[in-house]
Length: 472
Ligand SMILES: [Zn+2]
Image (cartoon, rainbow, N blue to C red; front, side, top):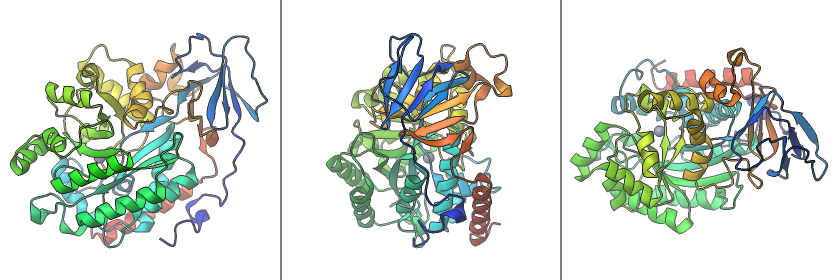
């Protein structure tokens, strides 16, 4: 990993990011979302020391000087968006000719041999491009699920943490794992499968090195065996015990396809949720990616356990996995966040666009579904399933993670309700983004990052990966 931290200019990032004091007055916002305050008219939001310090009603003034005043009269202000499921490395395998237009299992089997060729350099550039794309879409906190470990690349999460720290994005990086190879009746090839002892030892190492248990943490680790069809029951059980011991999150793919349900019946004699529950997974630290194929009784069990769902609408549509019953899950009391999922099954990382996708998809079957419900998925919903109450809202004391969208774009012209317009007309690029009170996007541009150079480097890395895998 010697290249990490060196040659930042090579990746278009200046050696030292300019940090301001982070005391900002966001004045006269056109609209604001994520405040419980009874102040009907919010005239401003003051950020101080990385938190929301004041919400100003009519006639109220700031209690201490600020470093900067932002005129937000043409901006809609949102809590920084939260992405609850991703696979950053997949940005190097977008729209692969052999993988597209396939359902999950054949799609995975086509891509595993390519992903087996990933290097540390690939992980670094993939993480940079995805975090850049997420920031530009207003996302300030993201989870990632990295489950590809090979002889070439044994410690990819260390690279991801270093890049995220440099770029100033709040992350929950989940240590994925695969221990059930094809030769044992699982799906992945032996080349990308690890032993259970090695996996658990690396989980312990990462927790000790990177996990910050405090509120407002920038870096957290969660444990994430990949799926019921790629890990042994023993690894599920041991991961749950380890997560409990360290009080950290547990994450996996679950109930994504009917094929997975059939696999679990044939291999373990149970439905996917039963299989996970038998191995200690049904509790408040767990969030499942997808959750498309649950019965109502299963939803009730998830709700009473306090586990959550990361809804990934574009991925479910692209892979033809099914329609996640968001309305039923919500009525049953299950907490739901939003995820863009990996960049090979979306194939973008724009969380604002994903909110629109969730909204439109739910409108198909639920006439009561609103744009505000869709916005909640990527704000307070995401914070809830990640057990991060300081995120996903803008009440006093919340983290100063803010996404501001201009309503001056062509696509919003003529819109009466600016908040609804972000979702219905489809906002794409945030105008300003702050994470922990620090500027990350200004006037629609990433601070200190040359996106043209970054894209050039990423495209070159993708081509080299395809060449190594023999599919260029
Ligand atoms: Zn996924």
